[in-house]
Structures are given as structure tokens and as C-alpha cells.
Image 1: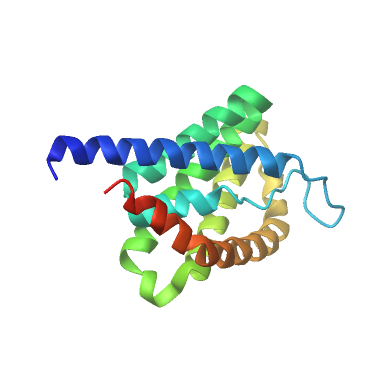
Image 2: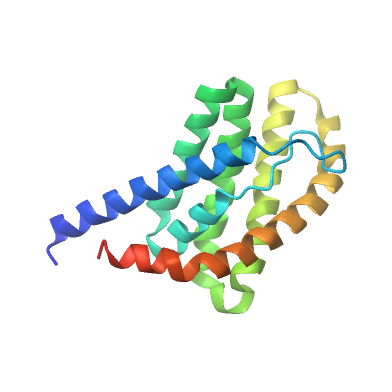
Length: 174
């Protein structure tokens, strides 16, 4: 396949993955808040798509998905949500790419997803400290860590289950 055609296919696949991530993010926003979860916490199902992009297309695709999701948050939920989404998404996508590339066999999808969820939470905590100017927000870290481990494990299991369908979709582009 020619280099130019490969770029076109990668771009098209990345665009479809962005659309899937936005659809999952929107569907997730329809879930009612659960009283036992930290305020504003979401399961992060769209991170399944980011992780697939990181492991199967590469760093630029994963970052594109994270940036599109952050832009969507800016447009639909405002500045604070956008900054929180971008800070967590960029750090998480970078972690996903590195772990998928160098530790996939040792950690598996669940381990990578848990670490990426924790990175997402760390990015959001630092953004919250920056936005509010108060370091006491870091007291929220233990609750976010517990939630991050739980949701990361769930997204890792879901990714493992849907990977055959995503791989099949990918074959249509290469």
C-alpha cells in the first residue's frame, strides 16, 4: 500500500474512533449520578477507544482522540470541564501509548487501563489545583484512586471483550 493511501486510511480510522469516543462520552453523560461515586466522576468508557487507538494506530491517533474529547467537553460543558478533560486525557493517552508499546504483555489490557485511569485522575487533580488555586483538592486523591482502579478494571475488561470487533473494523482500513 502506498504511503499516501496509508495516511488516508489512518486518518479515516482515527476520525471514526473519535466519533465512537464522542458517542460513548455522550451516552455516559446520560447515566444518572450514583451516590457512592465521587462528585463528577464518570466511568470513562470512551477511554476504551483511546486505548485501542494508542495500541493499534499510535501516539498521534491516541492524542487526537483525547484532544477531540477535550474539545467536545469545552463545547458541551464549558471551560472547567474542557480543561479537566484535556489534562486527564492527554496524560492518560500518553501513558496508554507507552504502556501498550512497552508493557502490554506484562500488564494486559486491565493493568494498562487501571494505570491510565489513575493518570487521568492525576491530570485532573493538577488541573483542579491550577483552576482553583488551592492544594487541598489533593485530599480528593484517595477517593479518585479507588474509583480509578475500579473503573480502569471495568474498561480493561470491556476493551478485551470488544477487541475482536475493533480489530475487524481496523482491517477495513489497512
